[in-house]
Length: 330
Length: 291
Image 1 (cartoon, rainbow over the protein chains, first blue to last red):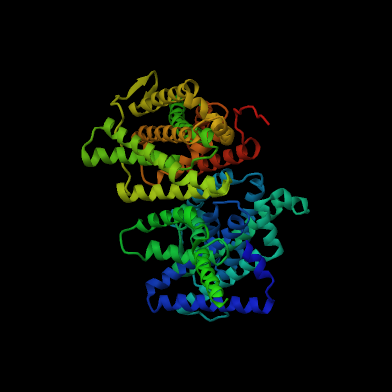
Image 2: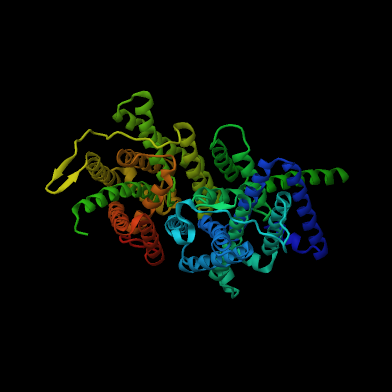
């Protein structure tokens, strides 16, 4: 959290320029990696979906320290909202994006208020049970969700009558993730974000300043759920179908790992972790599942040895480099 | 509600929940930490027992021993490699331990899936008891074994906790490990015992239940959740509280799915969790709080 103090004192224009630079660099690197490969385009879409779910979890999990594991349900709400409104009601998919955010936010709000006294293991267990029950319900509520076979043939959203080609969709998806990451990172450095992480460390101290820690956490969970639902909505652009198994519990585990792998010091750790997760699980030679095993082991090693994750690690190397340069100058 | 067959099914699955809850309970008492990896221990033990039977032709009793040894091994490894360093660095804070144990859970599942295969495995019954009838209720051999084994394991654990010095020290260590260390207790050793016995209980639970339900590398997560829930419902005050919690939860699961289907039962379990966590997180049987 020491970096937060330093960065808030930067002039606003420089911060905005820096963020723009990071975004452009991210888009450029991802596009370079993707090239013309259609398979890699799918992977980028998947990484963007993961990144949005992980960014949604960033506020409550990394900043507020409350691990809610219902995020597969929120992503599913986003995807099903788009599917239901566009396929069954013939509305524009954009209404689905909006409705998904509202519904996911509302569900998260109710769940957060019901579980406001819980933390740690209790919160994780009850939200995980909610996610399981929700997945069962998706398979049962055939009139809305299409049952076990789900909904297919979801149209790709158009932009004022212009149907963007696949490549433009990918670029837009990366841009969207970058925009959300910038927003969350700004939230992290804002007064609200600082009190959120202060409440994680010392709830009574925050309470004594007149801020309710419960209120902070509930808002963080609600906003996070709305963001995670856009991840589900984005996924329908790529696959154009959704089933109850599309967003399983594995997604939640991977989403917990992403900020840890990428680094918890900045919101950018979540999308970076998502890229690494997709790269390791789906783009690796070897048979199915070995990537997930590798991830779990990597997460344990990071937790035990390098709590800063990839970003923290790079940071440390840079710091060592600059400090040795400063010494040379002297 | 009056069908005795359903009550038997509830007792059977309740006994299994109780054993997993007992496994979690031992670590809660000794290390004040909910070991979410207990379900995966049970899963790994059952998978190895089934795998050994199918691929090496090992008789089930030997396979069960191998499975239990595996469960004890990974349980001890969890303590040495994960829990102890994480708790030491975070000063006993909850979130780092929770994240670490979640990663452990995931790692054990993926490791078991990679090594022992991703297809469901069937496990032979520990003792080949034929199915029999008690008046109008037909009892499967596996059901009888699950219930008998649960009673035996629970009794053995209670005796271990009450009569051996390690068992008696367990609570002292869990309550305040600094104070326990101060009076000369070998805290690390007592905790290793807790994790070891916990792993053995989980392994036994997995093997006897898998004879009924089969096992798959993903079973561990739901086993952990219901075991944890059974422990919360029962409370951590008494060593036999997990049995009460397990039976209550088994009852909800069986009657919920009988009357409302699979969705109904998972919703019912979620609601039980919500109600208990919110209103009575200390469970039905609590121990007196000393401040």
